[in-house]
Length: 395
Length: 121
Image (cartoon, rainbow over all chains, first blue to last red; front, side, top):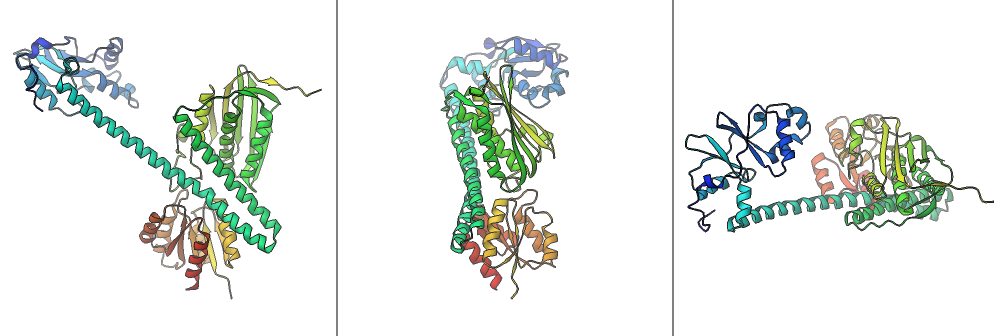
């Protein structure tokens, strides 16, 4: 890149030193981090011993190292020299600014804004030159084009990523919609055959299958719509009073349909209580948790509960299903996680239910937690703030 | 005449029960199995004429299972892949894993036709 257009040929870099701070190479990483935390504008510190520069500690790179997993535990107590750039760009104070900038810009994109170390003719440390500061301050053609290029580049990358996620999502969702669709198609065909034969008992069985397919399909569609509304920030809260036990009974009924003929008992453990909240969202949360329980429970009990606590209620969905391995618990609420890859995935479903449930719970100001014993079942608990009032039987 | 035997392997129980009913009505003897594991055992003992194999299953994907069936010289059952994956990928899977064909889930007429074609020959 040509720098001739910029009237900086005559300037010597020694005149532009932006900081003279320095630290010793033995200083611990944690102490350096403190310095960066306390001085928010501090971008870089030269590591100097006997006037000689041994390395350069850069705010961004150090934070990037430490905030990686276990970064702080690994490096926090080490001497700073261990984790810094030991070959920063070092330039003599007498050098011209344009020559220096040429050198600075030749660095890789990741290092291009790193501070430049300025030394005297005997290689003794003088101070740091901030490329970022210079580029920003000058606001000239160079900075403009460079920053625009970088901006355009990162924007393009971001767009690409978003579009990848979107097409992934669509592929996933359409695939998942096919499962219930195929069940509905199959059941409908069988119904027709049974109608011809006048076989009522079988007709009823296939009607049940058809309903399961439709219930599953509706749940997937509702979840997709909810997710897009949440992402667009268009989810409104419409609070009103409703009876909690009635809601749990309704969800229990749906759960029984989803279980088909499996030997699972669905019970509701709740007192009648009036609660003020967004009914549709609370129901959606419970429907998601209950259909999950139905999906993963082959025998035993699914229990839907409601308990009043100090400043709200705790809704719970407990199952005696397959449970979750401890290491998979934290992944549970991520979209499509379902913990295994698509081809060998354990169960049908978009894996969206829990993600959406959590987002809905957060929207209502509550929290969702899960406890699980692998092989023995899971309990999901949803806390919602509010003031439940016991409903007394009418006189 | 003895009925031709078909083993259906699919982890989706609703799918399993509709496919079973459809093929039973078409006059075949059916056994269903809801996990890829121990499929080989059943093939050995029951000796089906055809295995209808779902692809997306926990632990072991159906196309891999197909390769396993093919690599066993003592087994000469036919294999039809049965999946809601996209059709092009099914075509590739048939070639790659040596299946005798594929049927898209939901295509009931296609299921009857392809099963019929294979078991007639």
